[in-house]
Amino acid sequence: MTHGDLAGYWGAVAQIIPVLALAFVIEARLIVRRMSKKAAYKHRARRVRWSVAFFVLALLLTSSEFAALRNLSRDPARDLAPVDQVNYWVSLFTVAATLSIVISLPVSSLVASTLGDVLRWLEVNLPWSKVQKLRRDIGRQLSSIEHLQRRNQGNRLGALMVCGTALLDRNIGGAAWQEMYVDSLTDESGLYFMDQTGELKRLVLSDPYERLWAYRVARWLYDDLRRDAEDLREVKKQIRAQLRRLEKITRVDSPEFMKLQRANMASAAKMP
Image (cartoon, rainbow, N blue to C red; front, side, top):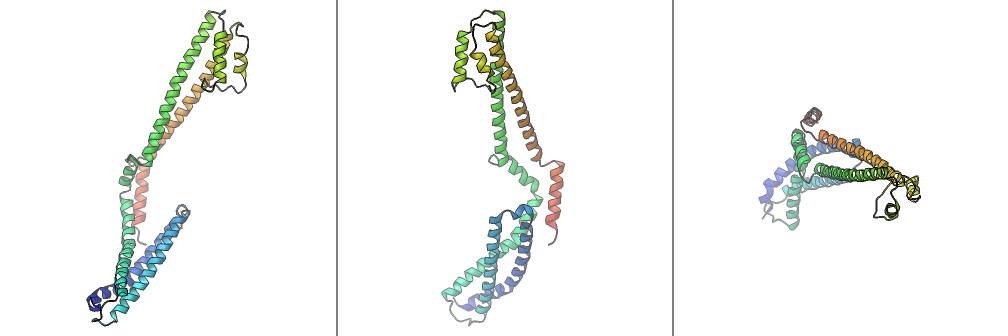
């Protein structure tokens, strides 16, 4: 292959690269303007990648234009040297890479702003999306809270039965119950109660044959379980509120989202 075989190619490249270079500089300015915003500026790694890409493409554009002009000035009958073949592929890659930035980035911005509701719907409803993962996490939290509520309800019923038994039979002996309560207080696998004041421990370790001893202990346990039930209801209420907020902000047909998308479309359609 000779230089004459690529004369048409180098002539086209010599004319295309100045136009591409101008469009590339304009697009680079727009990208830098977007990166200067507060939300985008904190992504330092992204700024470094774009800076390297700008520098490399500018260097390749300059070298490709120089190679095109130099090859046009050579003898058409001269055979291509290996370096000429390298210049050919480098110039081809440079033109393609620059076109990808000059054309694809503005068009992708227009497409993304136009199809924002569709992309948002896919982002929200894909099984592996962050929104779906968050929904599953909230669902697991609700299931856990409901399981704790059922267990708390059963424990409160048991405490009420002990209270009723102690009131109906006031001479009931509490030695066996005391042993069970002591095991629950000392064994990590037993029941857990927030006995911050030590009142439960004092009640359990008092005389089990004292009048209404079992009632006082069971009543303390019931009151503690009732407070836990109120806390569980409050936590469940907060989790459900989070789920409602999540559903609200992920709706693509809400007036707020439609207004935001229309503003993005108008901003993307503005001429630089």
